[in-house]
Length: 220
Image (cartoon, rainbow, N blue to C red; front, top):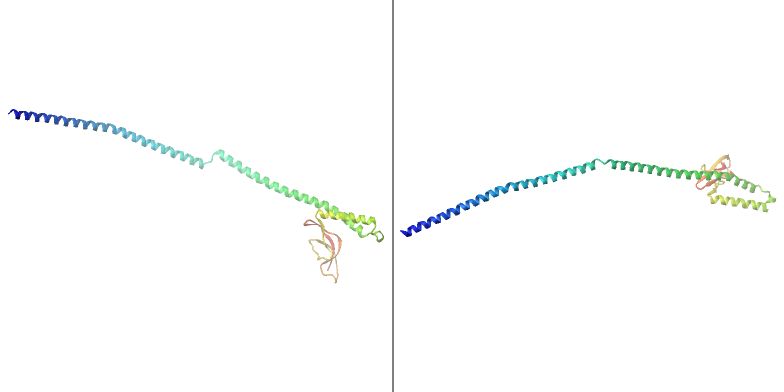
């Protein structure tokens, strides 16, 4: 009987220990659940804050991009002024360059015209030398005076050639209206038609232009 009593007491003690352990385990689980529930709102809040920060950064970046696009689309007043001044400078430079070139051409033309004017005034002097040489009496030909006049004439013509003045060939050549000025026509069966048979006044070229036309007689 005593043994049965001891066994029952031992079983009772074991049941009490098991019940206490189960109760403690239940309390620990409940505490853990409460801790998780308490931490969950904080994590959610942190996640929400991170999302808001990300959205704010994206919004700022978008606004910055829009501002930059507007700056590119709408030119700044300073840039517009610089562009206007640059365009004005280019126009003034082009006008000045055209004026400079036009002035150089005009100066060159004026200089050439001045040369022609001076040379035309010298040609009658050469004509007079030629007439003097053609009309020297036979008894005076070969004299020192005639030789001196001829030397002066040759020096004169050499200087004219050095300046680009050359005589126009006329007698015996076909008549050319660009070089000759026909002041008389003559019937001559022995001479080919439209040929210069006599020269009244010698013509001259100045470089590549006519300085003075030859006055000639032309055969019909």
